[in-house]
Image (cartoon, rainbow, N blue to C red; front, side, top):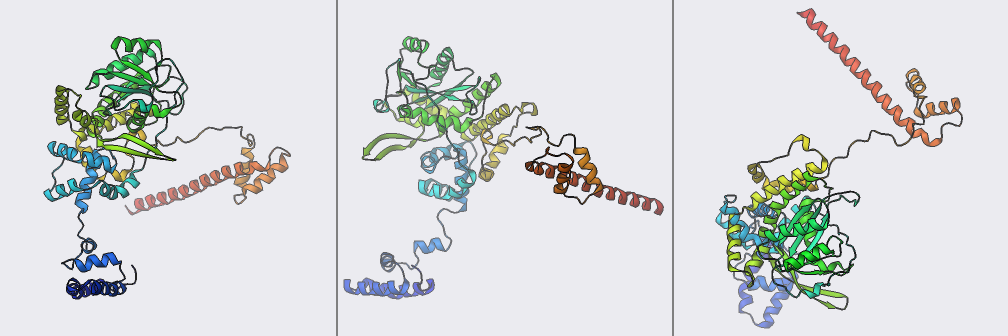
Length: 508
């Protein structure tokens, strides 16, 4: 509340009133509170806390005097961990913070003071978001488009409600088109699969959206998954709903289902990963050809390890509709690896293999690998491979982590390229054949305006030039005047240089 007494006066008044307040009756305490609130101009609840505490120094006063709990050292360490986690939100970062810090320390990337380390582990998700809020504003945001789907009715349907907490091994599969905003011609598609139970995500690039290649892609994904595939669920794309894939699933004894047409929420798990994983790391440029396919495969080799072992994600448990409102309940953020380790249906040997693999992985080194692969992919998209790869050493990448947020967007696949200057005409030059006359008159009359020259042309050529063509003449006259002025200045400078050289020769 504004208009109260000074802090020093309030502290002295509290020292006098605290003893009386503790020894007073209820009615006397009420009168003391009324007097203190009217003098100090503070809230009554705040006055009760001030008069009831032992020490004269409050927590708010300590924070106001500069003794913050989470100081600049904690903030800088948090920025490094946030960058190493690829800029995830505060709730997800809080969930992975102990694992990520332990991994960074084990690989020698972190050597924190014990006090700073203790405070960093104690920080809440809300405080993480508050400390990183100004940094996120400068770093920028990303957009996620929605892919299109086709209609087909050849296999049994499965809705979002039909999953009912399945065991690991049931996959949702979808395509991500890398057409750069255009579906014309041939371009690469990413075949993406996510495990509904754990969120484990795999992706392989396909040079063509063809039935047999889809079956081969699913074979690759099945070999990379830590658990055996039990069933697959696709949309109504003709590359999925066909005899080739139906026979493939029958031979492999996979349960094969599809979503309903025009009901994108039936495949909510894979649709979320298309944006949060594929578009996040690959971007929206157009990729085609075997070179781009190899670059994408190189990128996915690092992305699958980084996302599945070090990227926590939310998992929707249930949602309840109450009229027009929908209440959603989420599980705590966890990585796909953690969810598989905690699931009772996963084999013990699989869990041991996951733990051993995670202990050997360095998240910062994986992120460096991803950035290098993204640079190669950006060069492929811009056709700049002849200039050589933009390679950055791991030590350089590591040293830049504390200050990367200042550069804004750091993903090469999402960096905007400079537009090429336009050098061509879209329509015929209306002054073609008369420019020499205009230039001659401009040399004879340097002070003549473009409007005067235009009126003279309309007199010489009746009916040829309209009012809207004056601006074209003005732009060209402006360019000519700049060239003439530049030549005049350079001529004066050259004359001065010749005089100085002559003077030096005479002195020598």
